[in-house]
Amino acid sequence: MDTGLLILRLLTGLLVAGHGVQKVSFRLGGRGLAGGAAEFRGDGFRGGVLTALAAGGTQIGSGLLLAAGALTPLAAAGVVGVMTVALTVKLPHGLWVQNDGYEYPLFLVVVPSALVLTGPGRWSVDALLHLTPWPAWWLLLTTAGGVGSGLAVRALLHRPVPAKAGTGPPTHPSDIRSEP
Image (tube, rainbow, N blue to C red; front, side):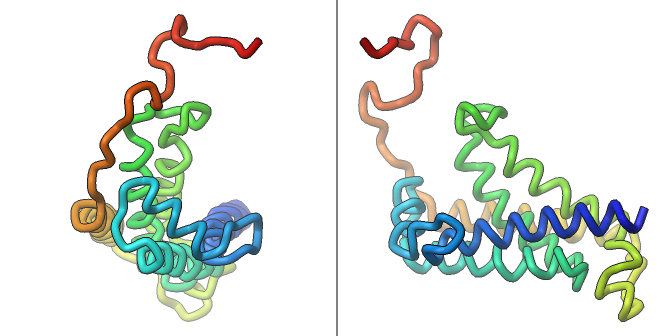
């Protein structure tokens, strides 16, 4: 079980941290801070650079803490918060990622929450410091805090972007045209 938790923590935490690095730099295929800011503005968020720095910094810090199994409830709350915002952006597109859906953000909300419930495993900083096990109510606190902070950020920083006619994805198979 400890090996499985270690692999899950490392993969999830490092992927989340990598997404944060992409938002604020040219590393890992990122488009730099200006590109991260443009992405948030394109999704209808105010703040541009500050929004990209806050999201990227939270992803980097929370992802690395999660990977190390250090302060796992706090790390999970950070990941859940940022990924809740991403989930709300992708929600109108449906579940599946091939339609720009929310399946990946949903996965990154659930996995850290589950790690709070199971604990990070024996090979973690939390176990080394004897911080585990946590009571089961930590899951509720962590998840509610993360989701609540994500929804608060969405409410405070998001402004609806008026849709231009004909710019959305096709909604019916007959709307899909093949290129000549």
